[in-house]
Amino acid sequence: MTDVAILSSTARVRRRRVPTALVSPTGFVIIAGLNAFLLWAILLSGGLVRLTSSGLGCPDWPLCHGGVLPPTTEHPVIEFTNRMLSGVIVVYAVVAWLLTLATPTASGKVRGFMLAAAIMTVGQIPLGGITVLSGLNPLMVGSHFLLALLGLGAAVMALVFYRDARRGWTRTWDRRRGPFASLAALSLLAVVVTGILVTASGPHSGAASATDRLGNLQLTIWLHVRAVATLAVFMVVLGLWMWRERPKDPLALPVLAVFLPLLAVQIFIGEYQFRHGLPWQWVAAHVPIAGLVWSCGLILAWLAAAPPDRVTRGARVPAAATETAAADSAAPAPTA
Picture (cartoon, rainbow, N blue to C red):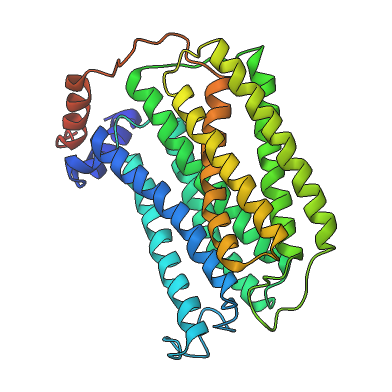
């Protein structure tokens, strides 16, 4: 048996052990979609830990007050619950990536994005430990949130690329719209980074004992406001451009229709919380919406920058082809 045949047989043996429903196109969309949802949900969970000043509810790591279970008081329970939820999500992200490897309709790019999401999610474990042991150093807290957003972005883009693969689409860089969309994506990243700096210099440190703050709050707000204004200009212009020259991808305009209102709501919340002393309830709403703005903004920038070469509306890879691929993956390995 040749080396190629051996590798092929090994891959088939691995896939044979996975139920066909889990590696079918529908199965992958459900698994990857849930992965993205969980990576978004952990933003809210982590935000509530910080906003309830529970970040040092378990001052040690990986234990909590030296025990496996936390004391039954408010802050330790909140922090410990977030740790347990994070652990479940880490396991799920890794399992989702492993199932992607066994999914015959998943392209290399899709598997790469799922791997990136899994790696960044696993990376939250040591980063979370360092954050706690550093006494909630604001740079470490900010890095924790940034890594969570990057993992979410990778999970979302895996779904976008899988959609292309299912439709048999290839994309080409748009020389006119691509550079502008790239600048819009960079401005989105600038909004995220400056927002993290505002958080690191603001009043919600994550624990009453964590008094170290990063820089001057007024300065970081000044930077953040200008980053948001730049993003708004880029996205409005990009939206008008896409409206005038209708994109080939039918998903582009619906994403635009979701993104712009989300951005407007986020700007309103940011302005309100600034003028009212950063009440924690409004900050709690600001955090998960930031995840939605980030995800939709990434998708929108990509769809604008690299339109599909040729689109047949509603076209998909024939069902028979995917069923045959799934059947092949479940078939017994040939003997030597």
